[in-house]
Length: 231
Image 1 (cartoon, rainbow, N blue to C red):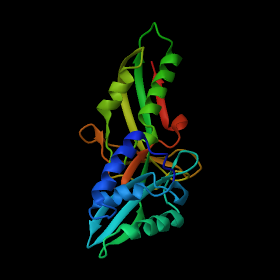
Image 2 (image 1 turned 90 degrees about the vertical axis):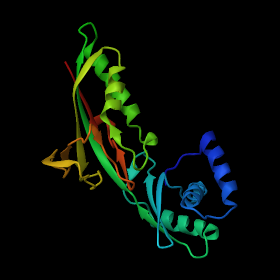
Image 3 (image 1 turned 135 degrees about the horizontal axis):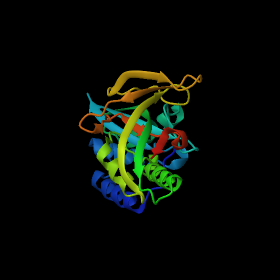
Image 4 (image 1 turned 120 degrees about the horizontal axis):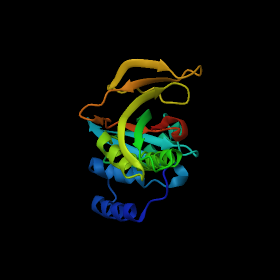
């Protein structure tokens, strides 16, 4: 499923949550905590969101491939293993259902002004590296919004940058990208090439791009989906 080994902080949190649950999943938090503890050999989900409807615990998972990229549909093996793992811990009247979360693939275009005493190419590389770190998928969560003011702050910390003049986001779909299109995508849809990949410009609301509890943002190919122009 792509989940990495737990960090020290995650282990501390899970120990406390496990003790409180007394080896039983009573609350939704218990189920999610327990789901993250499934042994890696059975396929650990990368990210999990859960909700309860009519005594049914519905979990939405995101998996990650060996290449570090998110997978739109987790295998039935991962889903079935997770259900079987949770059965001994669930309450007798609870049912567990595993579904796929949604991946929203993005492209980001940035225009910046650079101090004349700095090398344009070096500043461009610095901004690209800063954006790659900001959009690192390992830092991404389900229902995590993108606030453009945070991106501006990251860019301005790069030596040589005077100011950013424009940041534009696009929703990518088709080809190797997810087919999920968010509500903030406009009607400005265009084909990138002949491979069936399209991009639609996103209209920020209150200078932000909003996620949903079931979706996660991903810059799938940072070398081609992060575009920086300098002047």
